[in-house]
Image: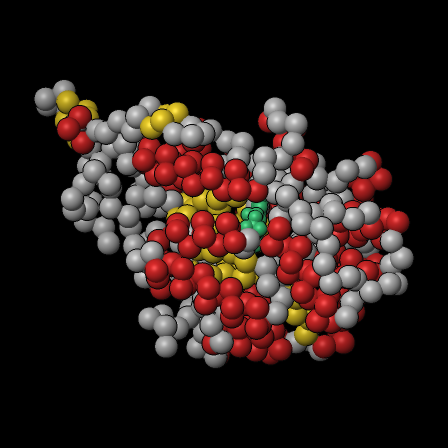
Length: 452
Ligand SMILES: Cc1cc2nc3c(=O)[nH]c(=O)nc-3n(C[C@H](O)[C@H](O)[C@H](O)COP(=O)(O)O)c2cc1C
């Protein structure tokens, strides 16, 4: 038994749904991507079901390469994550707010301030999904000709996170005494200069924001290549992954926990949360029909463009015989290496043709997809959880709000019946709700805040 035998649940907030065809579904508000009320509604559904967090992904670019694909993609009208989650912080009470931000193109001082602000605004519900950016389309938006290479991105990420944590520690807890009588606002014996000079970054500090309520917002990572797993095991408190196979998922889980343990980290301080795309029907047939309808909304050219991207742009799928078998290997990519491997492993196991693989990527981007009744979906989740391939799930509804409502109304009660999911929040901050410890300021011997 784990110390807490209940799974964690996060909602992957996405414009009109995770499926490429979602925006054309009659139930989806086509302008959902830029409608704050839509997101408030989604967050309320997740919060009403006691989800641990909502998560907002980000790629700061238009990722499709040609106008024909751009014309059909329903995602290029969206919000920037920290801005959206700041707005949601004032329209929610308990749910965690996970914002994606890249270490490849951001500046740590800016980002440390923004995330600290989000943690203060939400009274301790912020988290940072630390990404290294794996799409080519982003580099030219930040003055780079090419995406920096994979190892360089991770090396900069490691230094970047250390700097951000150092900035969050600029002020010890309790440094702002705000004593009107004496006229002393801040106790400068509790102020610390970072003075960082490293290979990639040079940051003096201190931060002009009080230490975040959680000490540090929760650190989320999704590295899955060798370099990525090493990075995630060092600092990921929540680790996202895409893994459609139970066996490989168990291997990933064990590898990550072993590596984290070897670094002195406790098992329950590293939570592995793979994605799941649930397509819920009251009968299996109804669920299958929902998926088929979504597939019919997705033009083959957009499916091919999406597949090309997730395979790392190493082959021209437009000129391939779609009914031929997917080969066992493709050239290595400098983009997202691990996802290519996950997809090729699956194709080999299932003996997929290109057409089948392309459709699978369009449906789930490589995540586990379960199409079935609430009972079947709950069973798949509980098996993955009990078999130690997950501490919880990032739920990626194919459509929102419809698919999310189905999950909340039909699957969550099944999870509760099996004793695997809670019905209310246990803590105040996201750390408390996830059972994660509050980091002690590096400059303080003991945590003076009195918080756990
Ligand atoms: C659930 C999930 C969400 C992710 N969200 C983002 C994102 O918003 N932006 C991004 O650039 N990468 C995102 N990624 C990609 C990861 O940050 C990482 O690049 C990927 O898992 C591959 O790791 P690797 O580079 O070690 O192969 C996400 C990955 C997963 C599994």
